[in-house]
Amino acid sequence: MTHILLRHRDIPGIEKFDVYKKNGGFDAFKKAVTKMTPAEVTDVVKNSNLRGRGGAGFPTGMKWAFIDRNNWPHYVVANADESEPGTFKDREIMEGNPFQFLEGVAIGSYAIGANVAYVYLRGEFWQVAAFLDEKIAEMEKAGYLGDNLFGTEYSLRIYTHLGAGAYICGEETALLESIEGKRGQPRVRPPFPPSYGLYGKPTVINNVETFTNVPLILANGADWYKSMGTADSAGVKIFSLSGRVRKPGNYELPFGTTFRQLIYEHGGGVQEGRPVKAIMPAGASSSLIVVDDKVLDTPMDYATVRTVGADLGSASVIVLDDTVDMDWVVNKTIHFFKHESCGKCTPCREGNYWMQHLTERIHSGHGAQADVDLLLNVAKQMQNKCLCALGEFSTMAVVTGIERFPQDFKKAVSQ
Amino acid sequence: MSLEKTHPKEVKQILSKYPPEHKRSAVMPLLYLAQSEAGYINKAAMQDIAKLLDMTETEVASIVGFYTLYHDKKEGKYRMQVCTDLPCALRGADEFLDNLCGNLGIKVGETTPDGLITLESVMCLAACDKAPMFQTQGPDGIKYHENMTVDRTMELIEALKKSNTGVE
Image (cartoon, rainbow over all chains, first blue to last red; front, side, top):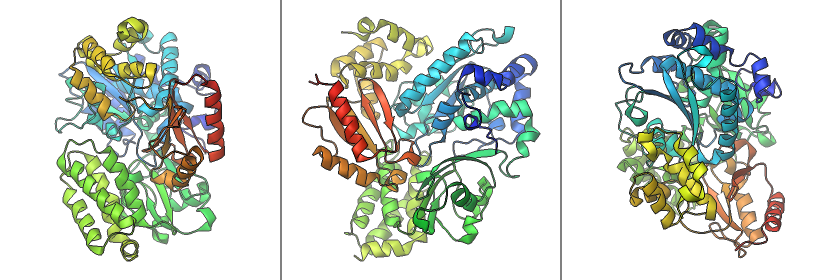
């Protein structure tokens, strides 16, 4: 299959300006700025049914249309904070096909009338940021960024901004706080960023993969995009496959591909030919799905994955085989969330602290059934009480682990 | 010495990214710049950045404390940060880190006696398909090392030793 996002796998050298340009690069941005109104650009994206690829799946065009046009200036922010355990797609896009991503940012900026866009990268992507800075400079030199683009009134500059090691900054309002030079702690919402974003101004924030879809949608039309994927989830998605598979990696596939196709046809199956015991389709934030044939044959789109007991999220599919105990998995995920909780709201800060005590005790063989019950109780107490999704996510593996794999916890406390 | 004196070009370039009325946004890049000198950020550097950006010293210190890639203490010249989160652990990251500790004769969080390497266990680095993996944070920024074995890691450390004969 020809790639739409990971085009560097089909077109060697597409990370170079000339090669990208020769393959239709920047045509869509030029067409948008010289021949279309911002509203027309937004309409194409809306009609394509593109949904946000950061995990929430919110309709992208609708988000752009929400921008408050009575309050200026506007900002665009690309979320390149990629920090969910199991997710490693945005880095490949930015390293392999950087101009398509930047062109998507540029088109989004034109659509909402922003003259400045920031790419917020996690601090660990130090080298990627330096690489993007070079690419941005090449675009400026060639007249695709800067003042009065293509002889119009429209001007745009793109800057990179490095985080410094905080998962919470992938949460969009924490990310904005971080660009403003503050600790990355989420804001109380509403107001939402399209009315109150960066520096209190209307802001659109989208994931790297979301933006990377946009140039080809504009070039080929909304119907072309909708012809791929499912009715619920249009287009293609990069599935980050990890865990106990033979060939972990990024696989760009249409929505509606089944777990079985992803794991066995693309991922080469499970190591040592073992059976799949559980799947986490949305990284460490995911619920644990008990795997049987029906689950393996489930088409992966936002609505259908929900019917087997989890969200698709950013499609970071972690595969667990029958040698993996869920009390170990939950101890790992809670260790992560305890470390990454920003400390702003009490349920998440205290809840994760206590959950870590309990998961450690249970996993190390010093726990009793009462500890498992208490762990489940703490997790459920936290649900619907946290300020942002991090706190909610931290409870997903705990609750589904204990409820769907009780035998693993029973074994852990009876040793 | 103020960053404005030691790195005038970089400071100007960093400040130009943000609206002049929001120059506080420059705190993170300026902290990286300050850290690039000695591998950590001391009190004087925080005071300097606070003054440059009209922030209080406490506000700057709160940024250093919040984000894990800023350090306020001197450790090894290179921090070797191994990811042991769930996807990496499913591919042997915990054993890798244990073996590395054994080979280096130090525990997680400790520094080799020559002051070259501090070994750390860190959260997800977005390279789950290439575990075991780690990043090195040092004077030349952050670098990824993927699909690693203990042998290859020891070779890397030997190479770092050779190019850093003058480690204090």
